[in-house]
Image 1 (tube, rainbow, N blue to C red):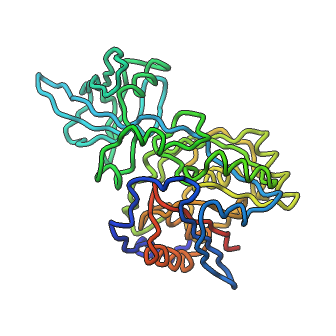
Image 2: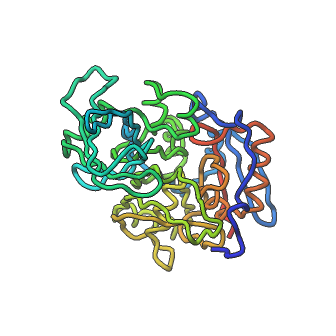
Image 3: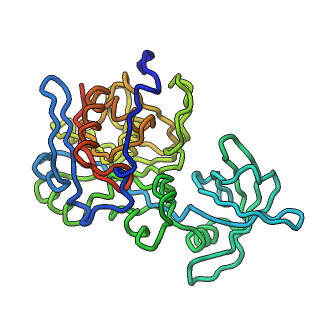
Amino acid sequence: MDLNMHLDDFDFELPQSSIALRPHEPRDEARLLEILPGQNSSLNDRRIGDIAKIFRKGDVLVLNNTRVICAALTGSRLRDGNTATISVNLHKKCDQSSWKAFAKPARRLKLGDRINFGASNNACELGALDAVVSEKGDGGEVTLTFDLAGADLELAIEARGAMPLPPYIASKRAPDERDQIDYQTVFARHAGAVAAPTAGLHFTNELLARLTDMGVTRHFVTLHVGAGTFLPVKSDDLSQHKMHAEWGEISPQTANALNKARANGGRIIAVGTTSLRLLESAADSDGLVQPFCDETDIFITPGYRFRTVDLLMTNFHLPRSTLFMLVSAFSGLPMMQQAYAHAIQTGYRFYSYGDACLLHCDR
């Protein structure tokens, strides 16, 4: 970490009109800003499909195959005959019956309060979905212990919940059925995320097939993205910021394949900051990816030396966010400030449903 940097270094002005409320259709024709730092730095305006012109035989795509669950729940707090409406966003599974969540308004909750999430917009009617507030933390975080557990709890959450759209979208419109498809990658497999790995939203099966035909291989990792990714950095001293831990897995077969490809001259292309953070969490001091099955709270800021990834495909991120810090570490803060200014000026669409950029590592 560069100790001379402060939170304000990662700030920028973004017009509200730049925030995408729906994804581009079709997915693989959204805009793509290619960012090449270094001595011959340049910004190239492209489309997502142009990655077939940039990637080459032997390159490896690393994609996050987590699946977003319907983690946004609304219920009624029951206490002494009085009720209050409570909205929660589940963000981390603790065990078979408990989840950590961000509650709103959290001030209306006390330890031992019971919340009923019985209301459902779905046709499927299940039994009651009730939870007790078993812990209260800082920043509106609570731990909810549900009456159901395991598969029964998962089914009830899917039936009662809505897609957990990021605050900058959810504050402007309610989730709807279209988001059930839009906010999920075509390769989503393992349920557990409460936010989408949004760079992956740009891929279609047809684009993946084109890349395979030209000799670009792909491997999957799993990182269950938590809602903590949207939490603001509050301290000007970046070393004081604590990331929320997220669970991830890289199989031995995937780790071996990535190491072999790189040894043969192939480039590792991380699709999304989630894939990159997991790869860096699993790398040893020699840059070899090791099998991984654990939580990670890695926090990457300028000054970090990347060990595993050559290119990063990602969306445009919030000002003063940990993700903008990460991309600034990858391609350099001055380069990213220039790139974001260009993107705003030329009408790129920002955030989860927005356009993407392809970053080359500034080594």
